[in-house]
Length: 578
Image (cartoon, rainbow, N blue to C red):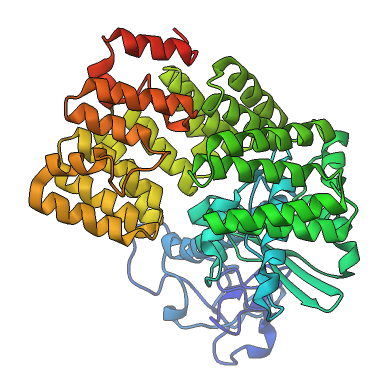
C-alpha cells in the first residue's frame, strides 16, 4: 500500500508509482501507520444517494483482526472521498491535463512541419530593393542603381518567379524600410537588400535575402571583387539568388542567368551610366545617356544592350518633343535593328521597333508583329504590354487593349508611365470619370509627374470644367520649367475665360506654339468651331509624323470631324484598320 505525500491519497495497488490525482511520486504507507487506529472506513462523511465504494480491504475492528490483510492507515473522514462522483473528479482533471498536453504536442509538431515545409518551398515572388551606395561618392550612384536593375532584369526572365519591376521598388530608394511593410505593399514573399561599396579598384557587395512575413534572414553573402570582374559578378549573383529562392530552372533558364552581354567591364559601367541618366526622363539627361551609350558601343561594338539603350533614348527624345521626329526616329530604328541583329533574344529592341512602327510609320500590322514577338521573348516585360495596349487602343480594339494595359499594371503597379497611360486609355474609351480617378491616382504617386497634369487637363476639358482644365495645363508648364507660359495662361483665362485661352493657343505668334504641338492647336480650333483650320493643323502633324496623331481614330475631341470626308481620307492615309 502506498500514500501520496501531497494529498494523502492512499493507493491499495502497490504497482502504482505516481498519484493518480496530482502525479506526485507515491511513498510506502507502512511507515505512517497510527498505533491507535488500525482501520479506515469510508462512509463517515455526509450521506450520499450513491452507493459508496471502499478503496481499501474491509477489516475487523476487533483486536482479533486478520493480520494477513496487512496494516491500514487511519485517515480522517475529511480525507476520504464520500462518493464515486468524488472519486471520478481527480480522474477527470487528469484527463483534461493529458488532453491539453496532447494538443500542445500536436500544435508543436504541426508548427514544426509547417515551418520546415515553408523553408523548403520555392519562393515565388521577390522585390529586389535599390542597393545602397556606401561608397560615400554620389558619382558612383549609377553603379548601385545599375546593379539593382540588372539583377531585376535577370531574375524577371525566370518563368515561375514574380519579380517587382524597377518602377515599383525604386520609390523606396533612400527611405528606411521594413520588410513586412514592403512585403505587404508589393505583395511579395521575399525582400533582397544590398549594399555596394567601391574603394579604388575593389568592389564589395553585401546581399541579404529576407522572409517578408517573418523578417528572418534566409541567406546572406558578401562578394569582394575587382571592378574588372563586374560583368561575371552580375551573373554569379543572379545564379546564387535564384538557388536560394529554390527556383526550379530549366537548362535554358540557367543559360539566361549565366549570360553576360559584354566581357568588357568598362563598357558595362558606361552602359549602366547611360541607363542611370535615361531613367531621369529629362532632355539634358537623355543627351547624357546618348554620350555614355556611344562610349560603351565604341569599347564593345557587339554590345547589344547598349544599342537597345540608345534606341530607347532616341525614341523618347523624338516622342517627348526634344528632337524632331524625322531626326530622332530613324536613329532609334537603326540602333534597335542593330541590337536585334546582335542578339535576337532581346525583347527591348523589338518593343522599340513596335513603338516606332506605330507612332512614326503608322504601320499597325508591323507594330503588332513586333510587340507580339517582344512579349513572346519576355512575357514579363511590362513596357511591351503597355505599348501593345496603346497600339490596340489606337486601332479601336478596346477590349484587347484593356487586357494588355491591365497586364502591364499587374507587372508594374506603381509605374508612373503605365498608370498615366492607363488613364489615357480610360479617357479614349470615354470613361471620363474613371479616367479622372486614374489620373488623380497617378498624381498621388508623384505630384511632379508633368505628363499626368497635361492629360488630366483634357479630361476636365471634355467634362466642361474649363477652370480646372486651364489650371492643370498651367501646372504642366510649371513642372517642365516654363513658368512664364503657366502665368500667361492663368492670366488669360482669368481675364478672357475659355475662349480667350483658345485664342491664345491658336494665335500665330503665341509662345505656346511650336512645331510639335499641331495636335493641341487642332483641338483648340475645333473648340472654336473652325474645322478647316483644324484640318490644316492635322495635315501638318501628318507631314512631320507627329506621334500624337495616332489617337485620331479614338480621340473624343475629334467627334465633330468624323462625318467629314477629309477625316476619313486622313484615316486611310495613316493605314488605320477599318
